[in-house]
Each structure stands twice: as C-alpha cells, then as structure tokens.
Amino acid sequence: MTNNLPTFVLASASPARRRLLQSAGIEPQVCISDFDESLVQITEPTNLVQTLALRKAEIVASKFTDALVLGCDSVLTVEGEIYGKPATPEEAQARWQKMRGKTGILYTGHALIDQRQNHNIIRCGISGLVFAHVSSSQIAAYVATGEPLKCAGCFALEGRGGLFVSKLEGCHSNVIGLSLPLLRQMLSELGYDIIDFWQ
Image (cartoon, rainbow, N blue to C red; front, side, top):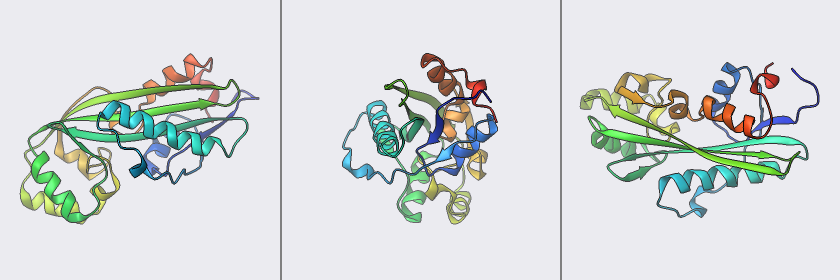
C-alpha cells in the first residue's frame, strides 16, 4: 500500500459492506454513525439515499481529521413504493407477499468525504431486480431465518435471498450495499487509485 494515504473509514454498521471492501482488497476502519434516519423525510429514492449517505458520512467525518469517509444507504422500490429495512417479521412476510414475481429497483447512495482535500463526492448506484415467484411457505421459512430483517429491501443477495432473485440488471455489489465500480470511479475523481488502498 502507498504511504501517506488518508485513513479509509466506512461509516456503516453493515457487515456486508465491510465484506465487499475487504473482498476488493480494502480493510476499512469501521465507525458507525448512529444517525436517526427518520429525521430525513424525502420521498424521491435517489435524493433520499444520497442524503442519508451524506448525513452518515458527515457525522463520522467529524470524529477524524485526515480520512476518506464513505457513507452508504440503500432502499428498494417496488411499484413506486419505497422500502427500507422491515421493522418486524410480520412486515417482512407481508412485503415478500407483495414483492414476489415483481420487478424492483435498488438504489444505493454513496457519499465520499475527503478531508484532506476538503471535497465531497455523492453518487447513486441503481440496479434492477426481478423477484422469483416464491411460495408462501418459502417466504415464511426465509423470514424465519431473520436475514430479511437486516436488509434494505427485505433480502440479502449474497445470502439465502439470492435464491429468490431471478434476474439482476446493473451492478450486483450495489444490490449488496456498495457499488465497487462506482467507488473506484469516485476515488479516481478525487485523484486516488483504488489499488493504492489494497492491503
């Protein structure tokens, strides 16, 4: 790794996002923002996820002086309705009853704060999904695993939920919570080469 790089900080509690970065050779310092998402009342999905990603990154950036801070947030829309993480198993089950056989759009906001250059870049990754015609018993079994309760959109593509997505258009890592190609582009815009952050 090149010396004298800012510390790469992930402003997210998501184990999936951390694993994505690790799989790409980056070992981030994780710092959770604990931002109250209910404070943001926006109904347009791109604006919503970008705003949430930036708020999380800003809170975490306030704890550092020389860091690259990445904040992310994801939502799923199905038939125009925005979905974040389900609050209860019952909500997850009802949502899957609506989602099965339908097309969804997964939006992930990415906010990268470069303290060294005093510059921010905010982007949104968008991926399309087609959900399989899963049975009610499969839905019940999936919800019982607890996995859908941890995920925006009520499924984890990299987990059991991958069984129930029949088609994906766009960046698959975006659906997991962080678009690696988009991150590479954002770092490049800031003058960094992503390979310099490899461990």
